[in-house]
Length: 209
Image (cartoon, rainbow, N blue to C red; front, top):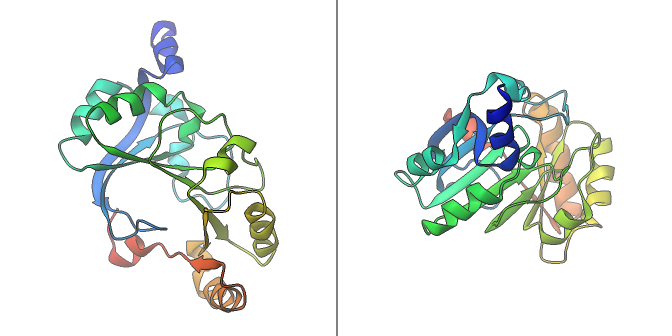
């Protein structure tokens, strides 16, 4: 990446854009809601079960001016979801300020592993064992979504739930490739521990992005 462009990316006025698309939010509190997704490249958290590993390498995704990203987003929806990769790899303040100036609702899906930048209407925190969230993001998370790949993830989920704010909604979501094995365990766990809710990747059942 050219040095001057890299500096603009570091400032957050350009971002490595992997893809952007209008669809239905499939997971968590806002499932079923029409939303415009902005997927930003770049992530070093390294979840082995990640279903968008092609997002990890920021170098392969074109640095895109946030003016262009916002112009596309506002054509489609009032609800914007910024995801990745790990969007907090980059400074999200310029992008979110511009989106807010257009009167849009802005959500983020993040592991919380990096400094929280940007202005958000909804923060979905999906923590990962290999790179834990910052204290700051625990305080502001609106929902905690723990992916359940194996039985130890229930322990991890409780550990994470103890760190979020009292108003944070708690979700357990089966990892897609393990859904047949883990879903019954999640159902049983939520029935015994009703502070938790079940989240499913409904967009995959609907066969939409």
